[in-house]
Length: 313
Ligand code: ZN
Image 1 (cartoon, helix red, strand yellow):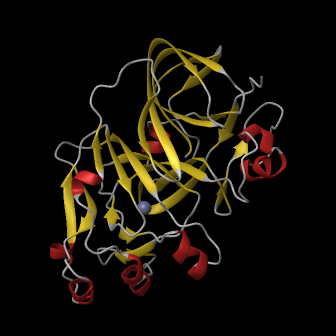
Image 2 (image 1 turned 90 degrees about the vertical axis):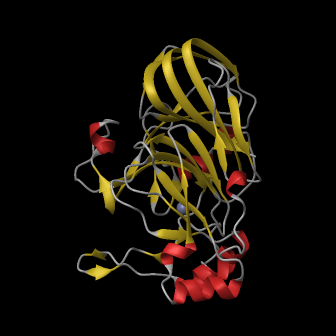
Image 3 (image 1 turned 45 degrees about the vertical axis):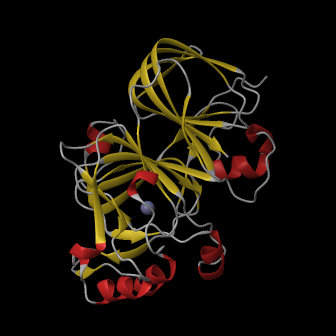
């Protein structure tokens, strides 16, 4: 049995659409009023978390993956497969789309593609997100993009706190201002911007990737009801699966009092998104990200907490 929990130090990004919530509400020690993302579990060239305590103190997650594969159940793969982040959008993010593995391997120097999913941590009343588009054919898509018919192109859908959204590669999407989400995704940082609301960053518009976007956007878009999962009251103290796709499985765990979870996955990523308590005697709180290693066995949670967990498919 390996009972050593791998706690990680997150990495932060600054973005024109970011804010201060990640410091003020989640307690992360990061300066600035443009904090966009907290990469809680990441082993990527653009952000590699370090281990915060214990046997592997100071190692990067990518180093741990390379040198101690036993922590992850000995599974294969040249890169750590997943990336988990909290995104605080004070303003709208650009309208964007991600490639799949095949396109990314060919056009992005061997990168993974990006399938991702969002759990909505917080949002205003009557919030919405951009998921999918309204073009019926490729010709119509090209026409709408080239002639900047954004209002007709993009599909906005209402969402509420606790909704869970799956975003396949090729899906046009955008997070709107006011939303805070937890994203579980393939370990990739490839984003193609279709439209950026004509905003300026340091006096210039940010680069768009129109051709790549047109290459990868799925036409027609998949129906809304296949993308949004409304999570009703979850059973307390049970690890509940939200989604399983070819890359990841994502779960929710509401701890109310005491929860005992028997862990059977090769490893289990966990992010505390609300509340505080203990995990096998160690204090954990909102904003903490950690990994239960292979062979951890039974995990005992105490307190009042909401946790989003994930592992490989
Ligand atoms: Zn995305």
